Image (cartoon, rainbow, N blue to C red):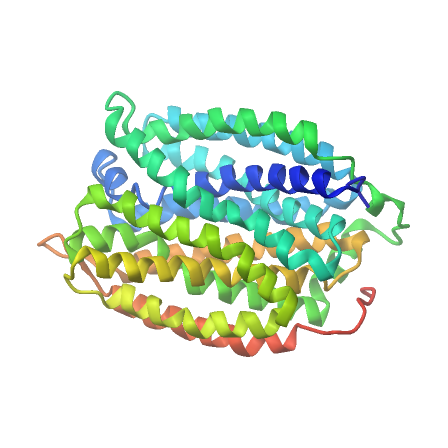
Length: 409
C-alpha cells in the first residue's frame, strides 16, 4: 500500500494522477478534432489519417505487453515519473516532425509511453484506494478526459488556428509545457507505492504473465474492454470530419462542441462514480451502455441540422461514452490480487489500445470521401459500434463477481 493517509493527501494524490491522465489523453485526443488540418497540411486521405491515429494506439498496445514483464517488479512512483519524462520528450518531438512518416513514428513513441502511463495510473489507484470508494476515486482521475475536452482540446485548437507559424504543431508544444508542470506536482504528491513488491513471486516471469493472460475470468475481461473501445473509437475519430463535411458545421464551432461535451462530463464523472459505488458497478454500466446507443446512432446518421441539436447530441455522446469507463474500470480492477494487478492492468491497457487502433483503421476503411467532399458510409460504422455496445451489456455479467478475489493459478 501507499503512504496516502489523510483526505488532503489523497486529494492531491488523485489530482496529480488526474494531471498525468489529462496530458496523455489530450495528446491522443487532439489528433481527432485536428483531422481536417492534418489531411490538408500533410496531403493525406482518411485511411492514412486512421493509420496516423492507430500508430499511437498500436504502439501503446505493444508497449503494454512488454510492460507486463517489469511493471510489478518496480516501485510504482519511480516507474511512473520516469515513463512520464519519456512521454513528454516524445510529445515535443511530435511537434517537430517534418512530414507524415516522421509524425507517424513520433506518435508511435508517444503512444508507447502514454499507453503504459494510462494503465499504471489505474493500477496505482487500485493499489491505494479501497474498492468501496474506488468508483469515486476513478471518477476523479478519469475526469481528466473531461478536462481535456473542456480546456485542453479547445485551447489546443485555438493555438493551432491562431499561431500560424506553428499550425498543427502548436498543440503538441502546449502539451509538452503543461506536462512539465504536472511532472513537478506528481513528484511532490505521489508517495512511494511498494506493497506489491512484498509478495513472493513463484516460477518464471513469463509463466506468471501467461497465467494472468489465459485465466478464463481475465479473458472475459479482455473481451469486455475490447468491445467497449470498439464501441467508442470506431465513431469518435471521424466526428469532426463528419460534422464539418456532412452536417455543415463550421470548423470554428468544433471547439465549442468539445467544450460543451467536456464541461458536461466534468460535472457528470464524479456523479457516475458515486452512483457506481452506491447502486453497483454492473447495474450502472448496463444503464449507460444501453442509453449511449442513442447518441451513437444519431451522430453517425446526422443530417444538416441547427447547431444546438448537434451540441445536445454530442454532449450526451461525451457523457455516456466516457461515463461507461468509470464503472467498467472499477469492475476489472478488483478482479486480481495486488501482486499481479500491474501485470493485469497493463494487459487491459494493451487490449484497450489495440482495440482502439483496430477501430480507427476499420472505420477508416469503411468511410470514404466522395467527390463533393462529403463522408460516406459513416452510418455503417454507427451500426457496428451499436452491436459492440449491446455485447458489452451481456459480457459484463460474466466478468463481475461479488466474491473475494482469488489468486491466479
